[in-house]
Length: 101
Image (cartoon, rainbow, N blue to C red):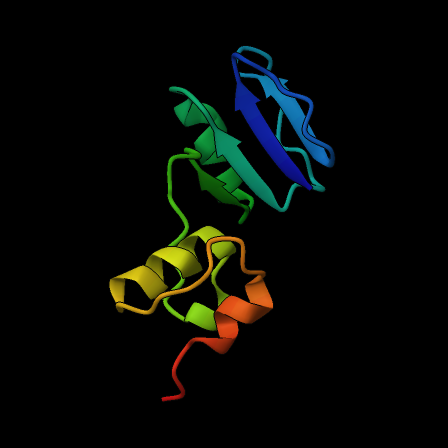
């Protein structure tokens, strides 16, 4: 379960939100923790428990395999390669335009 400590709780399904000011201890079922703010005590507690902690600002590394990209990224990739395509094309049709290596 993902746990997010923040001053602005949300309602994302499957995520446990907690206020930064209301840390009562490590949630044992947490698999990932995001601390949105300055709370070194929370970070230390989860890291000591061996649970991954981040500040939520890490960006996923961009996908480099065009066959795994989402449509907007795939369209950008095709454009960069000079490959023309119909702007209304479906993902499968766009993937068919990717040259074999």
